[in-house]
Amino acid sequence: MKPFDLTSALAGAPVQTRDGRSVNQLAVFRYGGGSILLGVVDGKSLETWTLEGESASTPVLFMAPIQARRSGWANIYRCPPLVVSGRPDPVVATSDLHIYRTQDDADAAALYFKKQRVACVCIEWEE
View 1 (spheres, rainbow, N blue to C red):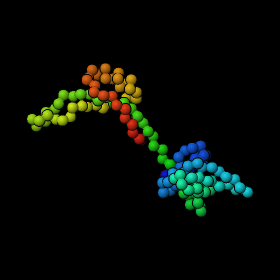
View 2 (cartoon, rainbow, N blue to C red; view 1 turned 60 degrees about the vertical axis):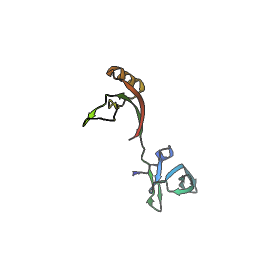
View 3 (spheres, helix red, strand yellow; view 1 turned 180 degrees about the horizontal axis):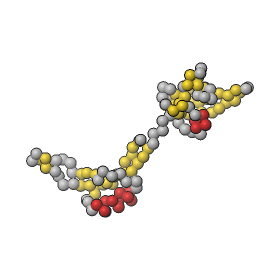
View 4 (cartoon, helix red, strand yellow; view 1 turned 30 degrees about the vertical axis):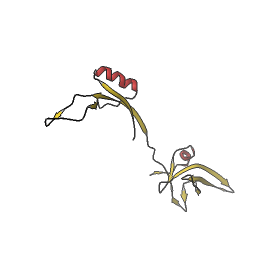
């Protein structure tokens, strides 16, 4: 787990507790001669911490891992049926195994390879 960073957390970076609960709406409250950090945990309860993300000197807040979402385009082509052991293989489509940044790039590749494209699909994944 990444150590808690108050500046990033207040700027909106994702934060979570040690047990993985999400922490939202973080705010610093100043009182007397000190300050506390207040936040909503799992959208249900209001909890407080030190500005270092600690409770009773034990670190309990951490920066949540950021899941980068990516997307791209893949061409699906019709392929001739393969004969395996004297029987036709049920696979009738294949990809060129490339993921293109834009649909226009995928379209251009389909024209270049001069294959019979069945579909151009947008795919998404997390890294």
